[in-house]
Length: 376
Image (cartoon, rainbow, N blue to C red):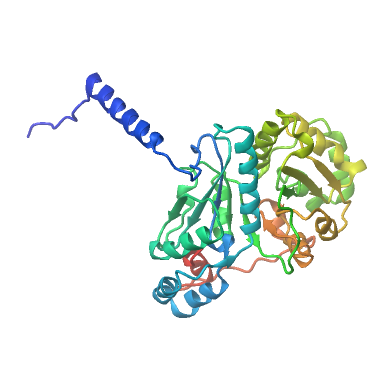
C-alpha cells in the first residue's frame, strides 16, 4: 500500500485564501448599522457572565432541580416572551455599558472597550428567552456561548476572558485553576442605590489582588508573626492573586480617560477594602501596587473591623473577597458581592479551621455531580 502524503498548499493558494478573507472582512465592515459592534477580543476587556448571574432564575432553577431538564427547557420556551428579572451581575453589566458609552464619545474608533459575553451551559432552546430579556433591558450583549449542559470553562480562554462571573462555585474554582480571574456571585439581601454614571469596583487584598502568602502566616502563626514578616519584607512585592489581571484591565481603561484630562470625571473607580492594619502591614500592599504600575483610587485599611458598614457607604457594583464571612456581612447590608475561592482562607471559617469530612463513594448523582450539571 502506498503512503498517502498530505497535500501541501502552494504559496499562491495561501495568498488567494488571504485575499478571500480580506475581501469578506471588508464587505462585512462596509455594512451599515446603528448597533455598536463588539470589539475584537484582543482589544477588549472581556467579561463572561452566566445566565444565572445576569438574571434572577431562582424559580427556573427549582423546576430544573424538581422536575428535570426537559421540563426546565419546556418552561423556558413557553415563557420566552416574559423577560427574566435582573440578577446580581445586572447592575455591574449596566455600569460596564455606561463606561463604554463614555469611551466611545472620547475615542469613536477605539476598540478598547468592555465586551460582555453570556457564557452559560444552558441549552440553545433557552437562548430565545435570554435574547428577549437582553433586548428588553437594552443590554448590548452580542456574543453567546451556550454549551447544552456541558461546562463552558474550556471556552473561556478562546474568548480571551478577563473576568468570569458565575453562581456555580465549582465552575469558578475550575476557571481560577485555569488562570482566569473568576468569582461566585451572590445577590444582596436588600437593594442599594448604585451609581448610574460611575462603575465602582471594590477588592479585598490578600488572596484576591495578591497571593495568600501573608494570609498563610496569619492563619498558621498569628498576627504578631505576620506583622514582623510584613515589616521585614516591606520592599518585596507580594505575588499576584487571581484578580490582579482584572484590576490591571480596569487601569488600562482608566488611563484612557486620564489622557483626555478626565481623571476627576472618570467613570471607573476602584477601592481596596482590606482587613490589614495600615501602620503595621499597609506599606507592603501599596508598594506592591506601585511596583505593578497600578493605581487604586481609594485604599481602606480596617484593622480587622467589619467590611459591611464601609461597603454600604462605598456602594460598589461588585465587591470581591476570598472570605465567605465578609461576603455574608456585605450582603446583609446591601452590597452585591462575589466570592473568590482561592488560597488558604477556604480552609477556615471566621479564623477557625474547617473540619473536612471524608468523601463517601456514591453510585448515583450526588450533590457535586448535581452542581456540575445544573443550568448556569
